[in-house]
Length: 582
Image 1 (cartoon, rainbow, N blue to C red):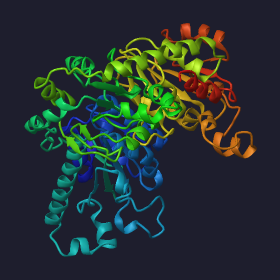
Image 2: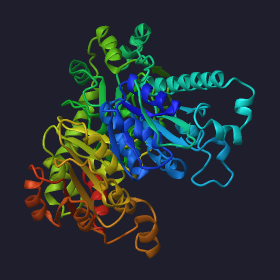
Image 3: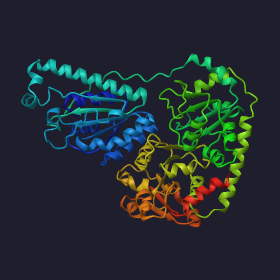
Image 4: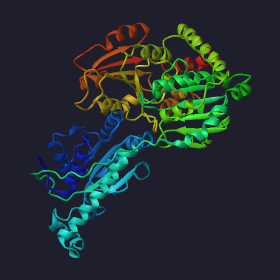
């Protein structure tokens, strides 16, 4: 096959190929030509062209999230790689293995006024698993090196010097990919290229040894903590972002049938059991306004808190556990442990399956009334929620109930941040849905791009539920040729950032509407026309019920449903809900 004649480009391709990293998202440019030509000439790689680097990075993030293995990003020099940064930060905090390969100018052309140059080394600094700054080959464009950096070749034999450069680059590539593969973290590989950039030659690549995957730790020391587990009559298991099907059903049954345990799950936990508490705020909000607030929170306070998974959405559970701290907080998971509640006492670097197998192999269900008491509260708010839905007018709350009910079984469901994820937390989802949301940094940017990337290799169709600000912010996500015809977008358009109306402060001023709520009168119809997406709209309950019937049916093009809701009513309906269930 034909690859670039630049040795460092060959090394990069070889390391990716040896490690089975075959999905490459490329943003067009010139300086990255050696990489683009090499990747696209090899049929082993699936190459995707995304012009907007910010969208490209979130597209790759969604793909890596779905596949659970590294995806490569390739860009040219200059500001291009800065546009990756929001997705890099998300990948870092969500532990998603992106491999950023940025082409650079030679070091002697940085900070001299040359075009498309910035200081690219260590550009992601504190939000990256590893920064590999590769060295420029001495065997390529040697005459330019002699002219601009003669000291590089004067003091050493050229062949020997190239050997040193090659060995250094091989070592750095191995370090970077090891961290991406074993630690599920993003890594940055910055590689300088001197012109000419476009020459290729027929060759067989020399492949290095593949990185060994990380080994799961099985900790025998767990047995030392079984006594604390057995003695605790009030245990809360709080599950944040968690990959679908990662915890065995028999483990979930053991936990769900333990009367001393309350399992608080979030929408992104992808865990389901009839005894799990899936709407945390519906439990906590009524207590916050109760005259018996202090005693109720003390009754709910756990002796032992166990956290699983990534970031937690609910602000109310954070406030509760920070004020009413447990005696012990254990985090269970092989990677990072967040001290979200300022009381973390132990991090068990094992899988939840291994942890709970040990706990339940050495214990029996206790006679605690902890679950029974709070399950009564749960059943009460469930009944009240149904009563509330029967009486409210058309609004965001009403729409989310109907939309979430409409999603077909086994779909991959992506949620945008802000109001979308917070409304969804209040409802129960079908257990067959696989739910994702960018909760690493919780930004509204990149939600559409992420969902599109995640849909590419997914066996089931994907639906994205998004708010208007998130959708319009990431509208360039639609600018690609990889949107499947079964991809669906539901856009809840309430004319601005309506969630801000819940916050303190005057809501009736022009300043508030402009700088907080950012009210607007935009709709998505022209965007859909430009990007060949079937468009439909709903403005009331009747039209919503009608259009959603056909929305998921097979079509020749992807579809978008824009649901317009009343901007000034939504916040009142939401806040009244918590008063109603109290």
